[in-house]
Image (cartoon, rainbow, N blue to C red; front, side):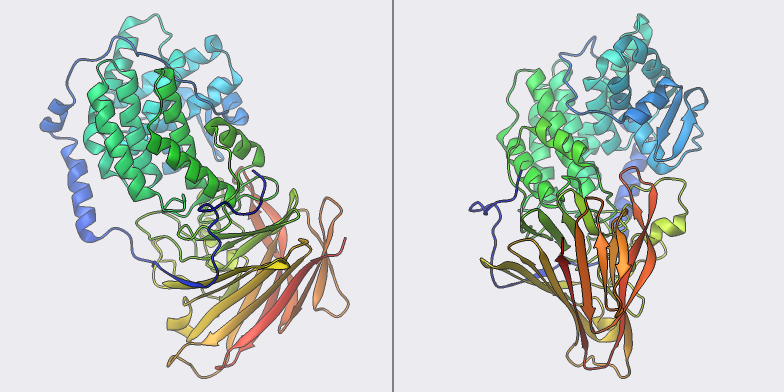
Length: 577
């Protein structure tokens, strides 16, 4: 998994310019919303109820392994009788599935039964089964026979199918035959529901989860060969819609990418439990997804923070990659996914070189175009605040929304505004529609030059950023330019700021001339920062850690004003020690 020279057809390093055309929107169209609402209304009709009827299995054909470790902290909380998720807790004895009083994120965690993985990680079957059964009985009483939102959403049924079958010993060990029959009956009804609903959920991880559920039902429920054939066709179609040619997923979220890798790996385990080879297209997709995922990992092997993702630990990423069996190197240039990677001698720089995702493809998208993160070996230097979609539930909503802004990323902001508008309802609006990219590789350095049009409409300015990394990994040189757009030049000056959010634990010592600072890392390494073309200040910042909790840190901020003809600021990070 180390960086190395590109494989043919893998890294695809190209010189020259490439125009990426995507754009922001207001989410689902009116027609889409009406169709989705109508489809969900049909769930409560007698016709759909009749479709769910049929024979239920007496047992499962096999039990697949869950190759992933759960969260130990959440698992121990379950042993203490508490369901815990991102700072939100509910006692098992007080769980009310009929009149829920928990957040949507907590509800998804609970309804997906992903907590079974946490429980099995910290307890034996004898200890864990009564706890799993207690929650299962409550869920069945509220949702076993009644089709309702969100419990019967297709993506949640898909995940539930994966976890119920992989952790069947925890939920089917009871000597109560009526209870066991009820569980299997619900499983069969869920499979029939998925057959009709899997294609009705959002493309990306939700649709992949739904179709993985269809396939697992076909593999584990007796008489499922027709469903398996149907499911493979559906999953292939879902992958074509959800995965880009470079292996990235359309939501542009590293956390979403990790989710897709885990889903496909669990599906492969279900095939292996039946002593069957997973379809070739699944293995090919998994390989490309892992390559793209590694491309947004730092020197500590953990994820960088983009599109609401947090810095998932390197230990977790390594375990996931090992479970997939894929051996590959990080993707340096994700043409469509939009992330560029520069790496030399342990220094890694990751840049967002694409517009934000469409609002209908991901909730909580971020205005992060042309931001970058930088790491030196196992330590991060420059980061984004990140974590808006993984934040602790106890954080103020205003702070969580603030994590999505351009100012929360290490890039340039014009007029204290976002490069892509963020609406009050959370969707992304107008802004970046085009990104122009030029990447060059030489023996001396690697260089990326990119520009976006997110400020053209409001300020008549194009933001262009050039970043180069020396071959010895000791110099990162950058230039941020504001260029007047044709026929859109506005009178007067426009204020702008360039922010470099620093990783927690970085000690900052300003230079005497006020134009630079020494950055001391926990490893003892020292990086010197210098800038020219603006005033440098040190301000407070925040970083969302792997558990979704805020960690206080600082940021370097270079401020200046651009005349109508444009402006430029140069800066450098040099490893002095």
